[in-house]
Each structure stands twice: as structure tokens, then as C-alpha cells.
Amino acid sequence: MRSPRLASLVLLSLAVVAQLAAAERPNVLFIVADDQNCALGCYGNSTIKTPNLDRLASLGVRFDRAYCNYPVCNASRASFLSGRRPDTTGVFGNATNPRTKLGDEFQFLPEYFKSHGYFTAGIGKISHPAFADQIVWDVQSDPQVDRQEEIVKLAKKERKRQNKNGPVDQTVPVPFEWHATDYDDSEEPDGITARKVAQLLEEHRDGPFFVAAGFHKPHLSHTAPKKYFAMYPPDRMPLPAAPAGHEKQIPAIATPPKYYPELTDEQRRHIIAHYYAASTFMDAQVGVLLEALDRLKLWDNTIVVFIGDHGWHLGEHGGFWAKQSLMKESARSPLIVVAPGKARGAACARVVEYIDLFPTLAEFCGLPPQPGLEGNSILPLVADPQHSWSPAVYSVVTRPAGGKRKAILGRGVYSERWTYIAWPDGSEQLYDYAADPHEYHNLAGGSEYASVKAEMRALLEQAPHSTTLE
Image (cartoon, rainbow, N blue to C red; front, side):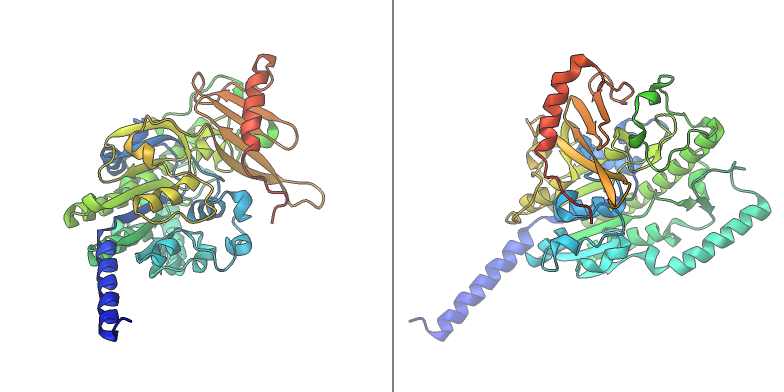
């Protein structure tokens, strides 16, 4: 029988080994921007200025075909933070608690890392603010929520100033609120978030840490210090180019709630300018984080992930705006992954989805896979962006239903070649991504594409389907 002293030494040795193992584990910096689409310099947009995200992409892998699993805030975040599809989480909008179906004992992504010895911090908007208390972190705060009363007062003050002095760009009325403020970056909520995260990185530089920065911009209102609006004169904003009348091929049910076909070109240019200003402001806050990684020499032991929680339409398809569409500009989102020892400055054309993030981060950090994950680790693609991969990924969105049904679901399936969207009223959309990446020509009605539709419908059926909407 072991002596008490020997047993104590064994336990002490195990504790030391555990500490050393924890110290050697990679860190995670997880960055989420709200409503950020792929209108970024590193994704080929030559108008917008996003030098920090461009730099981040040059250090890792830019995923050109990444899709959210539901194009609205709470549903998307519940999905990628759980590694489950909306059909599994039961979250199909902003009003459902993410634990409604998953339960109180379920461990979301940061909680899973916390249970494996990681320091965890979530600053800003990571989960939906209405349900921020449903995820346990070591440190959590959201400057936008903490300062909401003050922000409302500042917005009223700004509106009064604009009414008195005229807006910064003498704008015409648009359906999306915006504010060009007189404040410094560090005084804005997202600026506070970036600086708080940088401070936490310094305090926990010895790791291992899982630190998340959630930026509210470019989500409405399109608010940023006025210097960012000065970068984008509305009259110089390019409008989406599309074949005349192509929107007639889009089923009515596919139209998002924010559909404004009546806007003038002048109004459209103003909205795009406002969105770009808010995106560039957000990019500058990413720069604060990159500077902290540089200064603290954390790149060699930190995996950095940047995503937008979903895309955002900018007037495409004859008047599509905002989100809640299964078409490219809404369902597709930016994803950049920088991982020590993996590919640098590379682009990946494989289709991936946001539920892949949970297993990817767990694998990279050497954690056992959580049972029930519905995505796949994309670590092989981070190492080799040309690696063969999954045939398809999925997204869903709700539409109002008549009678006693709360809502109905449209479903999209995306392969490297094809996009197929099926609606409960029988409407279909089929696009050849190789020949028509902007989704201008709906091929669903062509008999010559019957076999393609059958193949895509078969892929669609492979994803789990819910029978009821909560």
C-alpha cells in the first residue's frame, strides 16, 4: 500500500504535469463582428478600407465560401457557440433562449474551454445580449449594454446637433439609422471592448486563455466617429451591378424583410457609405487587438479567428437589404483563421459552415471533442486550403406562416459548384456558383438541371430537420 507521503507526491506530480500541459496549450482569440458581410479589402472590395483585417488574412487563411447556419444574430450565435444546427438548438430568431432545448447543463464553446482549464473572457457581443447570462465566463461585460442609457442620450444629442447644423454629408433620408459622432474611438462601445480585450490579453499572456471580442458594428445603427464617414463620400460609392430584371426570377418568399426596391440611387449610395464607415471603424478596433498580439508576442501560441455572425445585403437583387436571406450576401460571411504553424496568406475555396468552429478550436487546442458536435474540424484546411472537403454546407431561415403555425423554414444547401434553396411553398432557387457567383440567374425552372436539383435535394435531406419551431 502506498504511504500517505508517496500518495501526496504523486498527486503533486500530477498537478505539476497538468499545469505544464495547460501552459503549453494554445490560446484562442475569437473575434466576432455583428452584421459584417464580405465587403472587405481582403475579399476583393476595392472601395472599403480594412487594413487590419487585410493584414490578418495575410497571416492565415481566408475562407471564401464560409456560411452561417442562420442569418440573424441570436440564431447564428447559438449555433456556432454550441456547434449545433438551428434545428438542434431550436433557436430560429432573436427571442428564444439558447438553452431552451439544449438544457442548463450544456456547455457552450467558452464553457467547454473553461472546463478544461482555460481562462475565459467574453467582452462585447458574443452571445445575443438578451441571453448573455446564459453562458458562464470568468470575465464578461458588454460596454454597449453597460452604457445603453448613456448611448441613447448621446444619440439624441447627436440628432439635435444634426438637426441644428446639418448632418455630416447632408444626407437624404434613408431607412437605416446612422450617426457620425464627435467621439474618439476609445469612447465608443466597440473601442472600449477592444481596449478591454487588449488588457485581458496582457494580464493572461501566460495562458491558456479563450478570449472573445464581440464588436457591435457594423450592426445598426451605423455609428462611428465622423472621421470614418469622411472616408466614404456617398457620390463615389459604387452600386451593385446586375442584369436588368433578374430579380423577377427570385421567388417572393425569398425576399428578406428589409426589401426596398423604391430607394433612389442616391439613397442607396448613402446607406452603403454609412455601412462602410461602420465597418472601417470596426476594422480599426481589430487593429487594437493585433497591436496587442504584436506587443505581447502571442502569435506563436495563439489561434485567432475572425467572423461576421452573418452577412448583410447592400441593395442587391433589386432592393435586398440587411439579412434574413439565404442568398449569398446574407448567408455567406467572412471567416479568417490564423493558426501557428499553419498556412499563411492563403485563400480557401472549400465550403465550410460556422458550426465547424467549435470542433476546429477544440482540436487545435488538444481538447477532446464534445459529444454531439454537428460540424467538422476545418483544421486540415487551415493547414492545406486545397485539401478535399465536405460536399455541402447548410443554412436555414424562417418566414411568417399563416394559421396556427408560428413560422415556416426555407433551407439552403451550398456546394462548391451549386447553390440550391428550397421553400415550403414549393419555390426553388438554383445557381451555378462557378458561372454565376452573384446569383443572378435562377436555373431551378430549367428541365436540363433536373439531375442537379435532385442531387442538391439529396444533400439537403442529409442535414437534420426540425419538425416544430419554438
